[in-house]
Image (cartoon, rainbow, N blue to C red; front, side, top):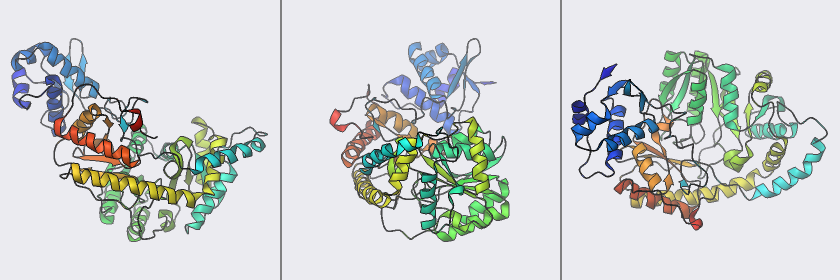
Length: 477
């Protein structure tokens, strides 16, 4: 293992004059060196005492900096062997913004989840009334309740994609659906193509399976079919995970020509396509009508995943898979090792909500559009150097910063009362450091306050203890 002396580290770190607290500035400087590649992974750092003497600071200061680096996942230590640089495990890192603490008082802008719609209460009441007639059975249906599968199938058919209930498997949320599909179809070492940026929890599943992820870059303008096709061919991808409908986090919408081109490329390269449609019902502006991606499927290689979480409410934990009847049955057998079946009451609630889809769409369009416009206006006023494209649907802005690290900004913002999801959580190997995902699923007044706090964090950095929000500004989620 390579070793760096205290003198070498002191020469590399760039700490602004007057930075406070110094231990945090030192930790941030070392982390920046690792992320920039100027400080290689698995290089042993000098002993705390030696570095403290060279920097002319107390040993306590260096100890605190090393502790913070260990907490963030950039340093490992073993007694008698010293400390060496590492890259954080995304599933375990203390920086992971998804592992927030309830009631911590921070505005949760790490999470793109809207509150429940007004139709939920009535749908729940009707579902409870429906429940007794299901209580005569054992309650386990690995495929999902027929009443819900019929509504999901009818919805796909209404979108121009003929679907039978036997082609639908109800899952316990879209994340569970992704877990089931990749768990059945992907093995250790299999190449899996993903967008960059992409949905972090899909990457988590691929990592758990031991897959080799192959990123293909997209932008606010969307996908370049030739690049996707080239990546499929050169990687021999067994499976590709794509979000063509208001992609999370960019908000991009794939046009029909690109859908057809990617479907053709998948046929030529024998690649299965997993299409995440979680945001597909949330067009906020007038957009060209697009067909479901599976409408371009001619040889049963597309698996569509949907969810109740964005149009309705994440707390219901209901998602679904649309595929061939044969693969749906295989997935139902496979889920026996996971959860056997989804909760009956929640399925009945979602079945009732399907009867109110137009009502909920209109409500979401009104509230999300108001929140989006508030967030956009606030950013343009308070942070004019940041750039982004306003999406026509979905629930998030993908923002390019005017310099600096989104991870460092997220840390500073937490001290100003806002929890953020920095760009690297949507990419591979620490990429996308200059980006930030900002959801507009909170009410306008919350977003206005959040932008003020983010702007202060951007300008001043951390400021002591994290403030608790007044009850009137607590997030409505």
